[in-house]
Image (cartoon, rainbow, N blue to C red):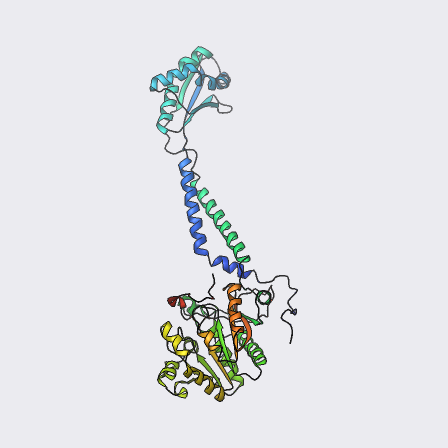
Length: 481
């Protein structure tokens, strides 16, 4: 037998696991990322809007000409040029400023005033800029009303007439950048959140590949079962209808069927002459029931008599996965009321798999039902009548049933979902399984996402959820902390 640390063909691959795992981990926090982006964006908008100061501008156009009618247009243009040179100084002079302030009954004006000549013309443009549109308009009107006295005294024989009268500005000349700042803040915060979650995902102590399983877990990893979509058609996607994955269904990929065949071969190889296999997981929703059903179907395809016992009485799922009708009797009736086992068994029409379904019971009652001598006798009877018996047990973090049943079976198998339970929690569960009388075969890494750029076996699988154990709590000592 090869050592646990023997290298595999993919040992020297560049990536220890596929980056799609981190991408999916980040996308799983999409609601939190969007919420953070919105909060940061709104905060940036409020801050920017609170500091925004609108600026208004009013302009007027003046015509400069000489008072001497005999002078030519060129003289007027030359005069306009001379006037433009000193006009800014004139309109900003203390004399004109005092006249304007006196006229408007103002103490000071915090805006700006500027004048410029339109090139190659005798036209001047005066602009007044400030934070209040009405004040800006009043200031430029006061300049026009009082400029002639000042310009006549300084420049002399110059006539200035208003060509375009100023108006009250209705919109600021500087647009608010609040919306743009908000969008940038949202993008930056969303990107930062994605980077943060990506880093957290990278350093998360979970199992993301078979290579990591062999390094972090104290058991064999029998292989990887990759994710397969359960919405096989567009109609199923829009109807939110998920179909269970079974090797007997034609829409199930060939890779999944072959993967279960490989897993069956490895399980049988490690079990030797043993017959009863218990399958469990650390936490809920790791796909253990689907693995148990398909492994039992694969065994039934090869062997004449295989029995699948749904011993997850807290949350039975095997009959739902197989699409069976409600039976007349359940495992509950066999253990509690003495109904013969053969009366409660159903048969799969494809491979002849025998199924002993169970009916959901409250937690305490379910645990008491399997912890009986009657259940021990049932397993002994199954051992005599069947080639293999596969038992689907509840997660170890949800109930202690597996700890009792593992003393009655020949072997155990732990289903570990990719990037789900913490490696420390998985190792605690493995230690418990290895401490019993049965032999722990190892684990199988389930629901693996890959883009085929990392190490792996290239198998395909995907499993659905048939409920949550959350209703009876995560009180098990193996729950992730």
